Every structure is written in C-alpha cells, then in structure tokens.
Length: 168
Image (cartoon, rainbow, N blue to C red):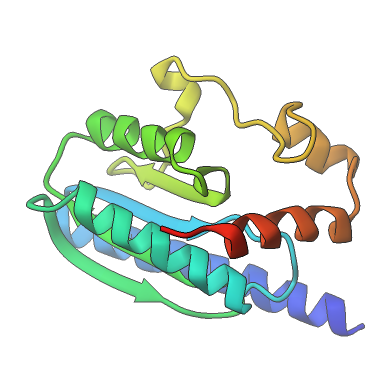
C-alpha cells in the first residue's frame, strides 16, 4: 500500500515537472534541458542520489556556461531535477548531453533530456546514437527494465557503489 502511494506521488511529481517544463518552453521559446538522475528506487532523495545529482548539476553548469538563460532546481518525490533554458540549438544541446552521458564515469546514471518547442524530448536515435545500455549486463536498458531482468537490490548495489566510489 505504501509503495503504491509513493509511486503515485512520484508520478504526480513527474507530471508537475513536465507542466513546469512546458510553461518554461512557452515563456522562453528556446531549448529546454532537464537533467536528473536515473535512480532505481521509490526513495529518489537518498544521499547517493543527491550526490550524483550535484555532480550532474556542476557538469551541466560548466558545459553550457554562457548559454544558460534560466535555471531552476525542482525537488520532490521523484528526486531533484534541473531545468535549464539554453540559447543553443536543440540538436547541439542534445549532442553535448549524450556526450556527457556516455563519457562521464557517472554518465550511465545521468538522464539529460532536451525538449523541442512542442515539449517533445529529442531521442538519441534521431541523432544517430544507440539506445542506452543496462548498467549491469550491457543489454538494452529498456528491455531489462520491461522484463525486470535484475532485482532492485542488485541494481541499487551497483548504482550506490558507483556513486560512493566517485571521487570527482
């Protein structure tokens, strides 16, 4: 029962974030980026999740320095999320985001979405990049999630160890 209530609160937060994102798109009419952490738990506000988020925050702030026109950190049951309005072409912002996700030691945990003016996220495949891989086995992440291939404890152990070992 508690898990269902928390899951609903997480979904409600995601909806609120998307509504805020759309409002921000309509106001600025520029590229909007949303950065958050893929954290596999109903508690998305752990020490580890927050540590990873602030690593992502610092990276995004540095990589998009000079292009950020607006910034806001949203907090809730779905964890922290950074909303940035960027004065940079959409595809360029997405390419930089993918490069961060693929090259940083915590990049597998980073979820950086870039939205067009209609509120649709640009898919990495649209730019010729492959789908994201599972942090445990290397298969396509979507398939592992859909098939519940790995236990939550198994995933959390790997994710938390990755974050705690990070020395950036």
